[in-house]
Amino acid sequence: MLSLQEISDRMEIADLMVRYSHAVDTHQWELLDEIFTPDAHIDYTAMGGPAGDLESTKKFLATVMPNFSAFQHLVANSSIRVEGDHATARTMCHNPMLVTSGDGSRRLMLCGLWYHDTFVRVNGDWRIRQRVEEKSYMFVAPDAVPNS
Image 1 (cartoon, one colour):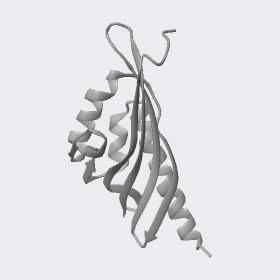
Image 2 (cartoon, one colour; image 1 turned 180 degrees about the vertical axis):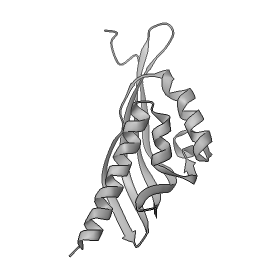
Image 3 (cartoon, rainbow, N blue to C red; image 1 turned 45 degrees about the horizontal axis):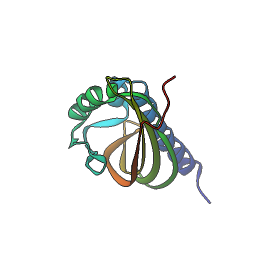
Image 4 (tube, one colour; image 1 turned 90 degrees about the vertical axis):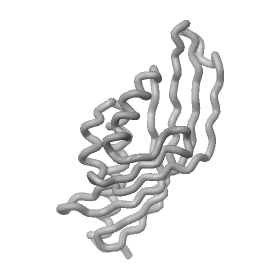
């Protein structure tokens, strides 16, 4: 049976992962400072992005995300392990993205991946210290979405 502390830790970590999705989907890069540790390492290479620290990741996201006219990050099926002030998780992410070209054509990109995260409790709050993406699939349907 899980203790109240373990239940609380798991819920706080799950909420942290949802807050990441909301920060990215709303382009609120400053919120990532409340999600990651200052020394975090973030590795997006499995899906074609860079690996780096928090500041370089925020710059990358601010540069690339405006290329997509619609997107969502859905996180689910987290397997969370908590050991004191440290935790790890493997979380599924489904990320549909709509790319609109200058000529008005649109392509739907479906990305499926797992986040492999390492968490640490800092001043009573959980933060992501390391995030590594693992690719499951990427599918691009050219001109699959009619203009509307």
